[in-house]
Image (cartoon, rainbow, N blue to C red; front, side):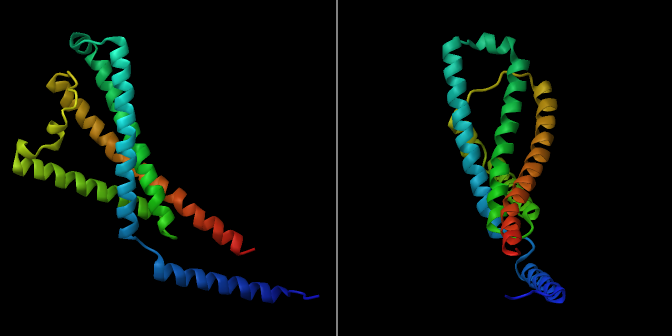
Length: 195
């Protein structure tokens, strides 16, 4: 029967800590690849959820026989509901993207989630700049022919700014939280291996 002495356990713990620190030094920090692939997942989940929401909204609108004048009378409610759904869809998408980035990288899940958000922000800025520089001819959103929400411009500006702030903060926090949860898997594996 083999007995493990206390000083042997201390040495083994010390060795594991040193090994983990060396692994962190080599593989820790941000991983742009994980952030990029996490962003791709965020885009895919957002597109999927947007399609589902659009199909449900179309089915409900057809069943309710909603006219344009009905929509104009309820513009405030329609705008608020649309903003809430938009925020929810993007938050879920960025959470999923952060999770994937956190799972792809063993360390720093929160940083990987922030990378997902940063890729999304840069892609959005590039798309807006390209639309502005090349004009309406290359405006993809106009070509998709999405239904317009009948809201006056002064309300749209205030509501749009507020929605943008909530979107930026919400997607950043969701991506970071997803990254931390994704990295938690590696932490659980490490704990199990340390037994």
